[in-house]
Length: 124
Image (cartoon, rainbow, N blue to C red; front, top):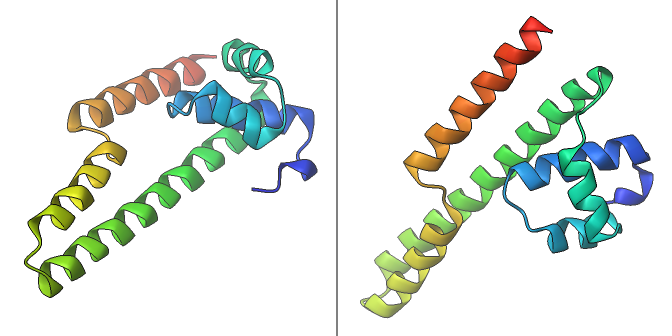
């Protein structure tokens, strides 16, 4: 991601979105070329009205990218299953997929949080 072209406000949005998606403060700071303390400050700061749509678009982009990565992993597992009888390779592939895939509980929890945020924004 080329973050040099992002304004300070948009970096705040990206930091907040990444933090909400459970990226570590260190990862976010490195990606956005900002200090970790700035990441925490951005994550707690409410977004201005004019940047909420941008935040939604960024979340959508991250979700699409995650789905693409998961699809590639599944494709590789499928190819491994067809090509080899090596169960260890399949187990390793499965563990990678499991590590990077949110549980149904997490998905449901995040969906409920998003619905509450949408309700709050609608009231405002």
